[in-house]
Image (cartoon, rainbow, N blue to C red; front, side, top):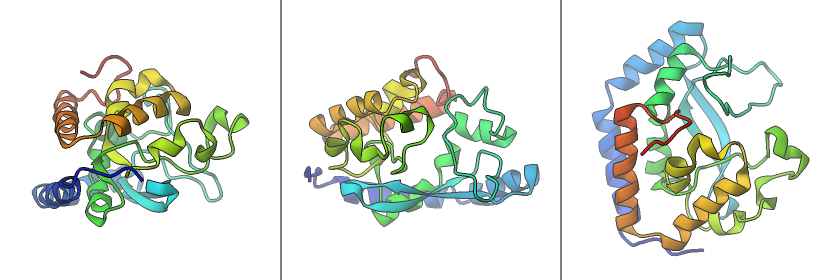
Length: 208
């Protein structure tokens, strides 16, 4: 496993705890808005692959219509064209508020603020024809040596322009692993707040 900067975990824990405290009013407003739109559950749980391939359950505010029983969940690649994304969900995704419950995962140590995007172990979409799971995608071994993150190089610089290709996103993730430092984390967190402020998380063009 790649060694993390010694300050990374204390920083993650402190910032996640502070974020949960400051955002506490939103935990009353957002679940209510989500529920009132379609009477579905406000929270969304899914298994994701973490550091070293360890599986954990990520928690987010639900932004898509409830999945029918027995129907596997799928990624919303293009939010503007995906009819499954709710009206409330579109607003939440634009400013990344759907990710607010991920602070719980960070507090628990499943994730970090900065790192590769946490992905389901099983491949969905067209790449199922090439791979059975993400461990088979070139570059997975390197990115799996660190905790997945709420934000990161791929999330900021690849974004929607990278399309659904796992291997291309893994290239960005591995750049982070190779150059990981506390100062790089601070830079990526600052850029993430700037993208949130501008409501550009779902933009298919440049975010920064």
